[in-house]
Image (cartoon, rainbow, N blue to C red; front, side, top):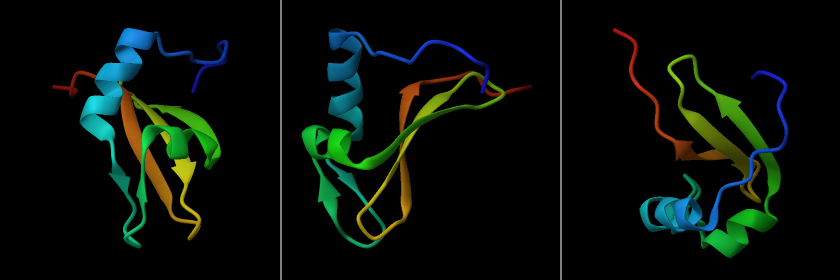
Length: 76
């Protein structure tokens, strides 16, 4: 990912993300609300080549989970 200031989601966008992504369920079966998600380790962003931006965090089982913050365009 390119160097840039920390990604901060505006309140309206955050609500839209929350509506689509939460509760987030790990493959181990644990479920997280948005507030619980924000307290998990990780908090790293990954930008895909097609423009999608994902936030990655670790479940307490150490699995990596992600949510889409910005949807991208598939490459043609």
